[in-house]
Image 1: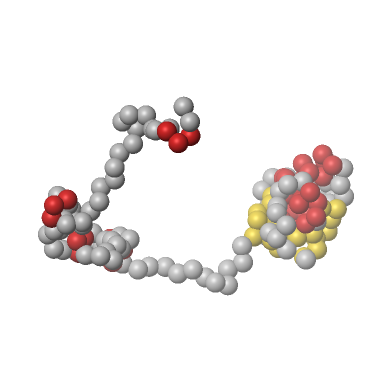
Image 2 (image 1 turned 180 degrees about the vertical axis):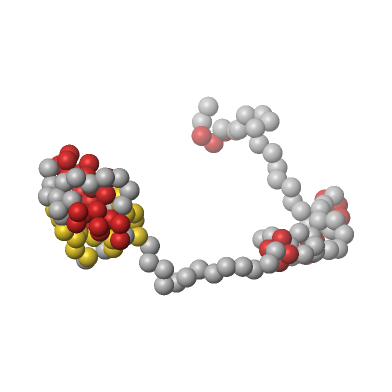
Amino acid sequence: MELNNIRPAVGSTKTRKRIGRGAGSGRGGTSTRGHKGAKSRSGYSRKIGFEGGQMPLQRRLPKFGFKNINRVEYKAINIGLLQSLAEAKNLTKIGLEELRQAGYISSRQLVKILAEGTLTLAINVEANAFSAAAQKAIEEAGGTIAKV
């Protein structure tokens, strides 16, 4: 056997359909596209959501709501979590950097401290926002707050 006489195995290759190559090919005329209509035309592509001419779902349903472009989204951190973090790492000050290192927030997230849980340690807390109840709980425990 040499490179010039290698052939594929019998039955492993098929000749492709040559569409639109004359009446004698058996696939001339309408070229397997049927008669008339949008699908028989060149350049046809069905639009997303097209329902055969029926009014599409996205046009049957009413519009509602809006997306507020000025919304400020905060990551909620509870004072119970601050308590457990301070106990585990022996901290007196918890800021954004400490929360990042502990894996609770990502680099660009804003933090709001909420009042779920109990706080017994006097911790100095630094965050972007505080709920009124959380602020009160931190100050009652002997800590301070600082808005960044």
